Amino acid sequence: MQLQTRDRGALRVRGRALEWGARTYVMGILNVTPDSFSGDGIEEPDLAVAFAHTQLERGSDILDVGAESTRPGHEPVSAQTEIARLIPVIAAIRSRLPSAILSVDTHKNDVFRAAADAGADLLNCVWGLPPALLETALERQMAVIVMHNKSQPRYDGDVMDEVLSFLEEAAVRAVRAGIPAEHVILDPGIGFGKTADHNLQILQQLPRLAGLGFPTLVGTSRKSTIGKLTGRDPDDRIYGTAATTALAIGAGIDVVRVHDVSQTKDVANVADAIVRNWRPQGWT
Image (cartoon, rainbow, N blue to C red; front, side):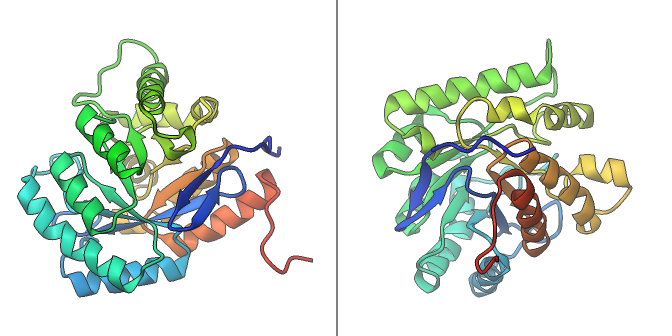
């Protein structure tokens, strides 16, 4: 079944326009933490820039840079520590890869401001859209990725009902404040404040998320639910992640956040050809 095609606007960053609905966009992960759950953290700026270049060559449309682990049981770090890890990497990437679209994965306003000054283009916040971060995004005219999260995985009713209510409220608040709707990207927060069964229930209902009318993002890459289903370690969960990616694209999701970019790009190209009627350049 092909998705409905209509003008849904675009993410406009650095003279580029990522048109929503035209194809699926791949967000490549770049962790600059020593305690990433999948063991892929890179703290040295030169090595991080080299990996950023690799992720772009593999097909990343957006690079998501984070300097604080959000894995279960992680040790929080101060804004100063996060800034010390993050800003040299963002500044170096911006200097050497000026056209790269950079997202900063943080929930601290001081970190967000410093990242914006260093050249970040989007906010990716795992704790929704707190007022201070919304104010900074408006001030800097930056797009936002708003994720659902909660401290304990307890839900009175259907988990997706609560997730959608939270995300829609945040999106409406952002638009009323002045952020264009096409620059408000919604993420249901797979693995954040949810059990494995909650995660599966959300993945089963992704068309409801797309139905809110805002751009959408899903991040399942290497997560523990996939590990529980497959019995595999984080660095061996590519195929499990690929299954969720293809199903998410079929449900109308716009962006997928992943570690394994080249494999995901293949999945997205095939799925997009089927559900979005996309074709690669040179297709005859």
